[in-house]
Image (cartoon, rainbow, N blue to C red):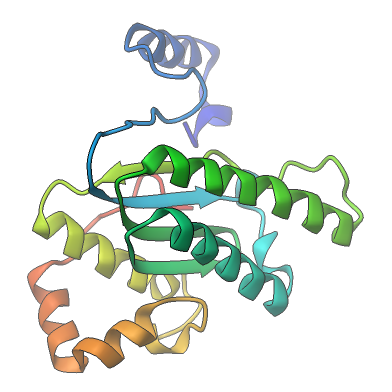
Length: 199
């Protein structure tokens, strides 16, 4: 739905009709509340991809700390995270996805209020809808982890994973080593992963 504003009225009607027939929320991605323990890639972007998170380095750090705090409370493990100026990605294992999503919603609400107050922009919409996708296989997991750690390079913020301070990439590289990280990158390439939904 990121291209909603570029759609013709007939394209919009068709998209809404399909979502309604499938019993999905009209203007947001469907949430799958799977039972049991699963690993999810979780992503959210600022409204219209505005660089609201990236207004200051302090805000970037604050966002990272807030998201990891939510994960600490509701996830069994956070495998990867990356905060960028206008969006974030998490890779987390949980058996309480509804609670994790609620925690993220509360963080979005708190941060919207705080950042709009700081910026003198009360009423501004800060966040677009958050969505999660469960991992389907080991390959999906490793490609997702590579995708998250590569995101700052993909968007041109840095040349190397280790150079981006708001990411788990540095810790991952320290844990597995450069050679193993390179092997994982080659074995589980990201190809066009996230092409249609990454800001």
